[in-house]
Length: 122
Image (tube, rainbow, N blue to C red; front, side, top):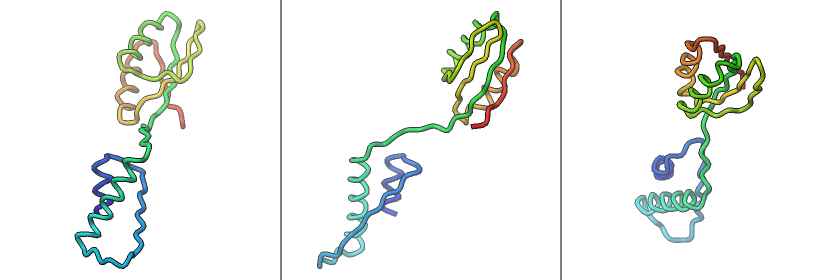
């Protein structure tokens, strides 16, 4: 529990912290062991490089060139990541969206006139 508590306080997921304690002849007792595990986990997490990642879904937008302003405005307003784009008379744009926002963004583009959206498999 002391190690788990440190993982929660650093707000990390998908992380493994291993604490190995060698008996040096001094009995720490329950409180001392808890403190030792907590401190070791804290020191390990402080020295670690924590990488933030999100789970994303990709969508393919298809539209004609005259709808470019509408689509680009929506992409900018929603702060979406453009993965790939093909700008010709008939345009295609692949966007990346955080999974928790995916359904809302899908409906937003689905309800936009002359813009087709399709979910891509990752």
